[in-house]
Image (cartoon, rainbow, N blue to C red; front, side, top):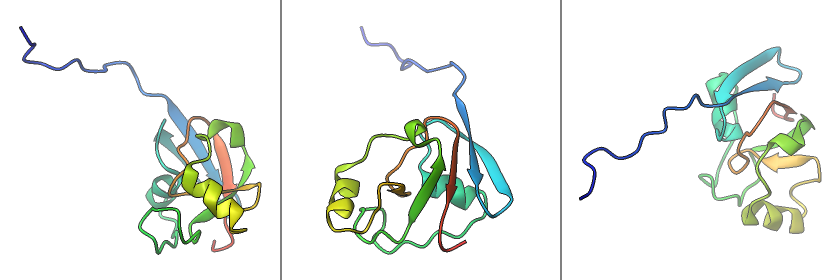
Length: 109
């Protein structure tokens, strides 16, 4: 017989700190939050045209520290790198999930 209550994850979520270099701002977000969501939560404007499809590269951010604390590159980000729209130090903030503390900056701040 199936349970009427799906299993709930009651463990505390890992909280990650995001620093936005050059802005004086930072915030704490749950593990798995997209960089773009975290920055917007910190009331920083992040341009975007493609709706999160990793096509425009407008939302790219430079990773100052903590690159190892982000999710692996997505296929979309690999494509942007092939097109020359993302450097080795940059990530598409609409694709990169935060898995630990990170410091980022962007040309539009």
